[in-house]
Length: 194
Image (cartoon, rainbow, N blue to C red):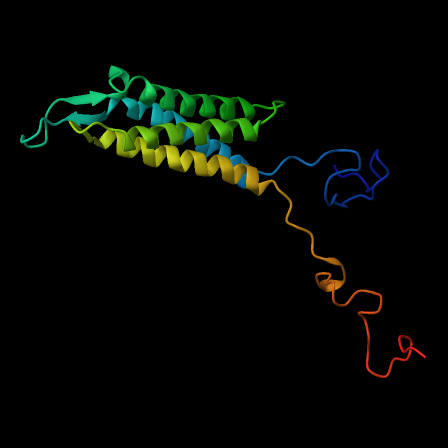
């Protein structure tokens, strides 16, 4: 059985489709660069933490071929700097993960600050390795993941910033073409004395 077309309960025409969102209703947030950058921060933070079990340094007594005893981040051989760097990266990932939940603030600046601090501490750990220690594969992989995590956290902040507005009238104001006596044109008698 078919019914004749009639206006719907909201006063719209039958068969007409709504274009866009109704007035007063907020459009759902798109999953643009800030969302995917936050997901990248979460994934890379967790990956960095689990890479802490990989050997970050190898003990290499002088004159011996490499391949001596290896040390992980959790052995605390570096005075805790490695563990602190991993903890900063994991905290950054946790805050970013909680920011992805509905109704929660994203806290991009905190996430970026923690990620950059974690990367910096791990970088200085690499620079400050003692003579008897060689950088292991774990330290290199964690440094790469930490750099990518910090870069995606900063990209999340920068992607939300508005582009700088264009100057009015298509050009930048210049002190040489403003009003006043510096705006003299040949044949203009307004500025002639006498």
